[in-house]
Length: 371
Image (cartoon, rainbow, N blue to C red):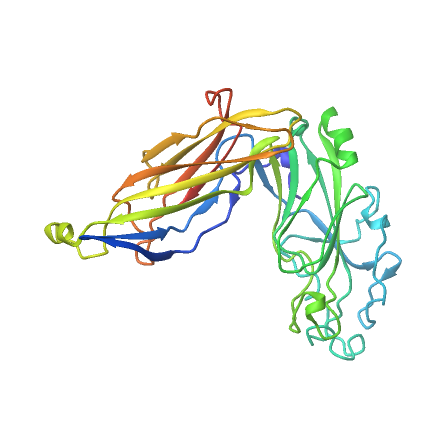
């Protein structure tokens, strides 16, 4: 069984984003040619009170509804809606007879093919019945997380997914191919109990994997076998009220290349070595607090493989209103940067830290990027 989040190693948030390489000739003037290059940039976060905990372990799983158990040789019921307050979503529901699973998980593949249940092949023509699926997970939150924003990040669930916390309906997601986020800290039971000490909670997830007899655009899916259930990882994320938004860090670069005469003197081949680069970085900062906050963002750039910082600077101070956001940006210059290629995949790292109190205090939330 997995330890509660308060006992788990807290990892740095990694938003696995990347910008594909794109080169375009911008201008030719005299003996020099300027090229604009967008480096691949992977976004991650740093120190700050931001925690990400894997939610892949400790799940209980079953098929069918408590009012209509799944039968291997029977098709799913015509109406598989569990309602707003299903028994399976309640905290005290007995799930001891459910299977123990970990994510990623296909809730359909273990079932035997059945021509009786799937006379027309079922969606995907797999002849595997697409019964509805239930997942439950009990977990504990540490008291010191009170006042933070808490989210569950689902990387993928097929297909129609509904989420409850302690019996309270929180969210629904209707696409089987896109990630989605569910906010927890505004749930009634969590708000009442988290501030008074470590609190135990139960998350319940209902997944209807049916995509129609033939699969169709209207059902958000194709005709092949797609599986069903929580087929990708889930993570619990905590961020402070003042934080860099999800996917809120962005960076791109402009490169200057040596003129052909300069490269000939240095024995270089044309287009091989840039003379310099300018990294343009921006961060979107959200303020979920009740009062305006004056902040700036400190950006820095680390070389491939780590080591000393190549460049660092802070933005001007800006005010972020309560419930609002602000985007700040600046540029960092680098001499003779190493260009990424398949043969030499050099990646730089851009760090961004939100600073308060005239940009002199420790970071309140942070993020970074690699190029």
